[in-house]
Length: 430
Ligand code: 4AD
Ligand code: MG
Image 1 (cartoon, rainbow, N blue to C red):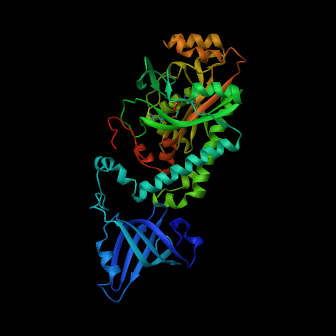
Image 2: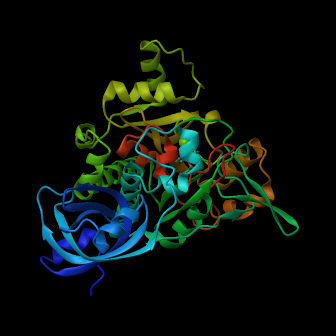
């Protein structure tokens, strides 16, 4: 008999099939027993009928506990009233294991308890929906870049140098040398962009962030496009296109999951290009007009980012930041060497920065000067400066954080729910 997944049932109308899964819920009503089975792809209502309450199947049914694993065989029919729209009439049932008392019950649990049981929490309906959207999100990102002719380049995770400042580096031993876990694939991407024109890397990145916030993970996934000859304006538009594409794909393919999460999709549907575009200095002025006390050189925190998005009710592009609050590699603005051509895209609905990037320095002497100013070890960046000596061109790119984007898409309160096993400050279990 054919083993099928619940999400594929529509292909097997009125056929006898086999379902392998776990008990989600059960109840009895007279001569009928109802089982809700989940198999990872969906939930199926299954029924047993017997005039004899001591029948073998009913005895087996009575033994079942939540999350017990089993194999069921029977004919599946369309049934409007059943969750998912199908119902199986059980003919055979093989129990694989009777589960111990399951710790996660429908009652409310505290976050520390749920985090301690993350390995089981993943099975809950909302967590399941978020991670299903995550899977779609990652696929949509790959499709977006692959369809536009970008080449995927895998950049190293063990690196000898910092990309995003030295304060959040994870240090490790590399035989007789020091190494760091990658904060970003950008520097290597600049080399692959000079070899392939337009590239992207997509992998885990690491930041020893000492602050406990709703937006920071220690280990997170980032997609980073990099394009030779592209300017700030080019990658701003690319960022807008990427965000819109991800939103469209999610709305098209993950409607059911968004419903489970009770996500009001109105604000996502409203996202249109071009996004409002302001400079850092304009942002400071707008914030001051809205009772924030910001001076030139202050970085935006979560409240400032949320305010800007609230004013525009759209994602907002901010560019031209003070050089001193941005990374060493950023290209200075024309006639304003105190500003750099950085780009941040802030999500709407208070989700803050989802994209960070900009135009890179392409002049070798200027780059060497910046490396010295930032007190970075010249030797470790020799290859990086080399890129500016052999056919240097202006180039630009950005990074989009998968979990930040997903937090916004799903409108979850805390980023920890957007990755199967979050690494957080002081938490590495399970
Ligand atoms: O702004 P960031 O630090 O930029 C870079 O790393 C550049 N080198 C990228 C590039 O130009 N190729 O990080 C980029 C994005 C942020 O906008 C945010 O979405 C995400 O990465 N991010 C984090 N997500 C979760 N937890 C953290 N601790 C994050 N730090 C950054
Ligand atoms: Mg940033």
